[in-house]
Image (tube, rainbow, N blue to C red; front, side, top):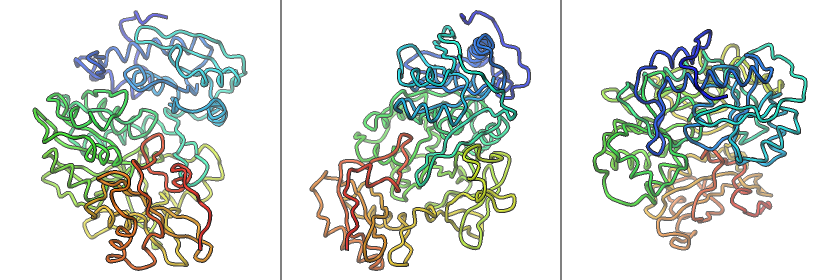
Length: 497
């Protein structure tokens, strides 16, 4: 089914209506010198709609998208979110993992590109789903569904599984209203305009990339330069290009760039800002980014269940408070007496779709419980102290991994650090840390690092082990997964005395 129709009919899709408002702009997506306009995105959505209808699916269809990063994934995600429900999935999964996700979603169709991720196609066939191949020029049905589809009573624009760092991943359903509310909050916070172009390095199967980069740009009529593969050695050079005005990434990407990117100050840069979200931003990284690029760093706080942004530090002349995630910017924020951060607002999901038992403890009245510990100052700026389930319990004493990491990052030989709990026969848990040393593995002694911490923190907070590795193991979206750190790093996790 070639994309030959000149326009798409805008009916009830607010995402398509937003695209239509900017249909006359020259560029929306750019990749390797090739451009796609908002009008192109509308035509692509029209063709995707035709393919889904031909497969016997209606506007309640749940469409899994498994593609490499780039323009075609962005186009497909925008189309699927507008027509039915889009479920972008990490393409690096194994067949049984795809089957598990497709089953949890009760997915109707898989959209991919020919020859890519064969495990996903096999999994879709096992589930009896339709298989659709997309290119920039066509959207074609490859296999028609053999299963009987149930039309879902509740229609969402986007389905995502939480990262599942401490428990089974939960299925989140977000409406177009949720998504556009959060995207508009990002665009307003960053003062985005059609003159802006974001360097998009975040994967588009993650809420940060989809909303904080792609949809925020769509709302503002701005453009995105899509980077198929993040590389810390080229990230600094890419940000120095004169057509790039901002970027948004997770702290681990910035730390890797600062420690291994090489080169001096950027040249020809038009960067207005550098945005960080989805994980804690260490103060040393914040200052390093501002010193390197000479522009404000905007640290924000978001999560999948709230369609991304909830708080943010402002741009000048507003005050950026290093160590905080700013004040409310997309949601109302409060802190319970026990220190847990709760939120409510137009971007927050209504409920977890699965497992339904996850909703039993997810709410306090009308407020969503984030699972994060934090404190609000008199001006409403939020400081995070860690995940409730990531707090390390050393013989009854509670240790925030953030606090231990912050101390180690002040050591001149340490460029990255992650603290996490390891089992201890006597005290229940102990503090263990993985660091990346400036001079490489073997360039700094563990005993020297432990003494450095002992001079600055109480004895129960001092790590029992500090392991130096070439890099910090992270999950598929660049997040540190403390609950799985020992396994990710291949460390022995036997309890010690």
